Length: 180
Ligand SMILES: Cc1cc2nc3c(=O)[nH]c(=O)nc-3n(C[C@H](O)[C@H](O)[C@H](O)COP(=O)(O)O)c2cc1C
Image: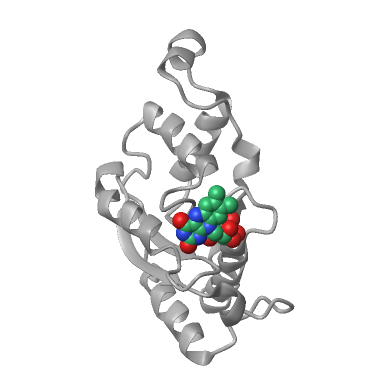
């Protein structure tokens, strides 16, 4: 099983990136045959989407590469950062460009969605945005988990959850990947 994962953030210190890395460690422990790959949104930075740019210059090659990466795997794991109650601009821009190649961005693949934030809501609003529209964009949503208070619930040195309940919740969410 090939799994593609990314944090929907362009922060080099992204807490969603840390969550993605922890989740993939667990996937690799539970399913040693899983092939995992992590994308960095900074590798897909493009001009802000505009219909005029698209008409004049076409779709940037970064958008095509991102689309191709999504198409090459069996399942996708995303952890969403929330900016002002919405997707980060970095993710939204990639999403907008890729949706112009194919509105079914996720091509019917199983998608596991996480979100985390320093505050208690865990990015629940951006998670709602993603989950409400997942089917429209071709995502088969197989699970979701918002984790609040990241700094208190993950050890900054080890990157591991500080309580076993949270570790179990993550494990239960990841279990949806088995057999995909
Ligand atoms: C412009 C901006 C807007 C933000 N808006 C929200 C918000 O609406 N909700 C929230 O929980 N956190 C918000 N935050 C705090 C982010 O959750 C925090 O920066 C977090 O680390 C982002 O995730 P990341 O580290 O994976 O990029 C905001 C941060 C920035 C810089």
